[in-house]
Length: 503
Image 1 (tube, rainbow, N blue to C red):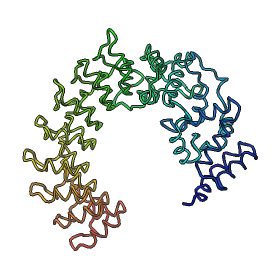
Image 2: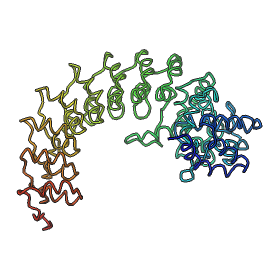
Image 3: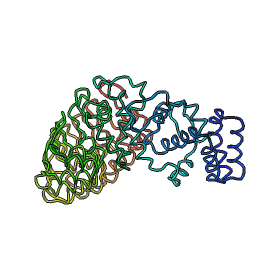
Image 4: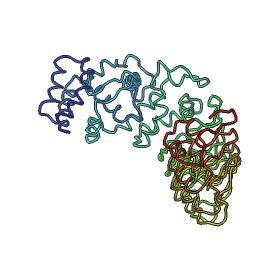
């Protein structure tokens, strides 16, 4: 697009913001963006004017641009304003320092806007983010500054005084959530000495700090009552965020228990492997922990790494003495089943490349690694497993659903094709509800799979236990293409009644 046209697109957004500024400033900005100046020149000119403002306004503007361009998620207006009010290292929050959003909009001279629908603040255009990324000198060490600000907020007397059960109303301290969830992300990217000291100060009473509950609640831990959660230490937290320097320091402290668990029997190694923090995993393993320790779901660190697809961490753990790669969790799943279930194809291939892996063991619902590979369309894994002769590729789960049934249900044509080529796979086998692979493919509108099955000679009119045929269910769900394919056959009765006498 011509540069003039690009600026016209930007101008539509600028207008809404510049109502907050003077008529003179609006004319200056629009003139720069629509008459002769390129995007970079226009942004540079605006930033030049911003820097020439009096000290506080210039400082606020640059800081606001830093936060908006480096934050891990869009910031709400009140979050940004409170972040800008923090004095790094101060034990107290001063609400008198909180600027209004109107002041920020005016100071930034049209470079930021508020999205009214969601009350978030963003840059006026994606090209401004690109411009700021190639001019890091504007902000200095942005991530360390953000980490220091978040930690100062969390260490303030006002925040430390919060009760953790139940979680309090945070309207007066709206920056608590962002600080709790992301201070470690910024610290991991650039850890200053100041941020390190502030983090250690936070860890002095971290188990009882509100930020632990906010962080843990965001994890959606299965079956865990966060209000009753306890024992989450500074080492657990630093391992979760992958802050290598802090973990390395904590494990050297006298009395540090590498195998210390929280109330879900989760160790620092569990948290690090779950998050794929390779550097931290190496440090913890170097301190001789119990590498196969079980959490409250009987899941090992290896299981968690496999479940979440952290290939390098899986490789590291498989080389450790005392790690059982076939250990079952509370649901009867091996790490291999967990990886296949979560579509972690790279991890599955790592396991299948080893001689000590049980590749056929099912979970408690009789779902094998092959079952999950077919169900999730992992074509290469299916191909590898089909090359073995130590398992039944047509073995159903506890609902009589075969791997082929699920490949058809999810429309994975490549997997369906591979399985149709085998003599030991029944393409017409119904589940415990009488639903055949053709029925389930028609139900979900997978026209390509329907055609493949019909070409294989399956019964096109076989009803389920309710008397409903593939054509019935395709019509019911509005899958016009599938319905037309089935209507084109002489052996499909479009007027067949179900058990309720309905066509």
